[in-house]
Length: 186
Length: 146
Image (cartoon, rainbow over all chains, first blue to last red; front, side, top):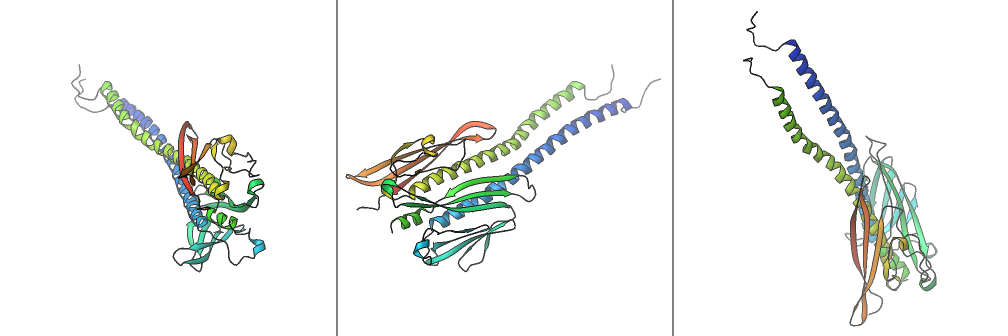
């Protein structure tokens, strides 16, 4: 019997299907692997950006920090009012040309910053797992007796809402150098 | 043999080979994005640590800023005999090796500035132990005596 029809046989089609299924399975697993890794590093990048923004803003405020004029002399070491969820200190505001309070507040998963009577602006939205701040003071002895150094110890823990177990943790200290020099020259 | 014209196995193998040759670099670009992300995270940490050291030093009155070269052992937790405290400290990060060099800059016999140089050696990423360097320098002016 002479075959005249030019077509694929069942075996050929089955083999092609099998090979392409194998190929697709590999491609899909590689792709989904990549997607997982991508969303992992994407949330990492978002958290890094949030942490960098917060630290840069706080550093800039720390540079402008001044001695609180309303604080009684015996409490002069309490320039930073730290409570869980709130940080308050005085800065010299260049735009208004006067001393204003700056307040950082954590509410639910947000971090906001407010200067003077202005409105609270978001620094971090939805990604705060926990942030703690603690005022620290070092008193020098010996040759430098009488000198103090005020600092703020921070520990920042951020996580995105989408991937709550992906944490970005950074602990750092910030020092208000101008305020310190002001206090030491009194 | 047969007059049917189709692709031979060899042709298919060759085309698949070429295809994978094209796809491999594409996937490498994806994974290098992930690696760059980890590098920038460590760079951020090195930057934070370097700023921390500089801020601690410039918080001191000019005359009490120590002069000399301090390696990572001297920085973490060693008390300065003259000052009675640790002149600087870094929030713990065992992989980072900071080094601080502080020198005096004199002009016409008067001490005008102190130059602070902070160098931090850090691993590029958790999975990549290649060392990278981060350097930050600043000058502190002598405002105490004219």
